[in-house]
Length: 186
Image 1 (tube, rainbow, N blue to C red):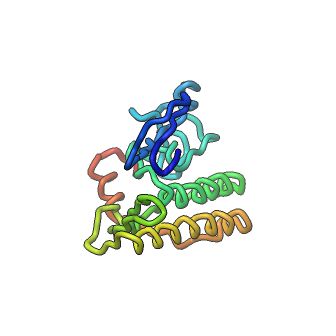
Image 2 (image 1 turned 90 degrees about the vertical axis):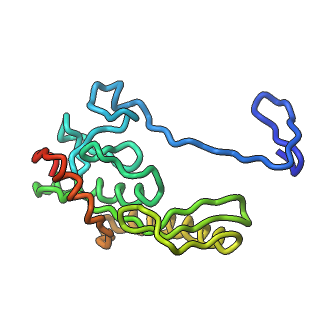
């Protein structure tokens, strides 16, 4: 790729003034291939503790999990909350304790549009957009700070598992689960 062209894997060079690369999110098909219950996208169906509905020895997190068949948005924001909570579920089971249900809440959505442009959109805990936003270079700087803080957070969690207990909670999730009328999923 140069300033005036893009080069796909096949070796050809295509002239381009503006190139927009989009990457989709995908779920590995391991759970489905193993005969475990998955949602339509292939995410492992779990209870609210991130434990497989088929086998209590299996715990899932991030983009691969569908707690109560109501998965969270595929994002680093959800994954950085679900990963440590999945670890807490494993530790609780090893210690003979009942694992706690997940608590996930969102604060923003952001998007990089290159190194100099980006959008930061504040959000309510249920992941719906709020009014405040930043765009342009300021949005890109905030997005970069968020990326760096994500790495910092993961390092902290690796050094001291279960140290983070500040999970935000989306109060509407419980209501959505109760509305479904399935007591096993509450």
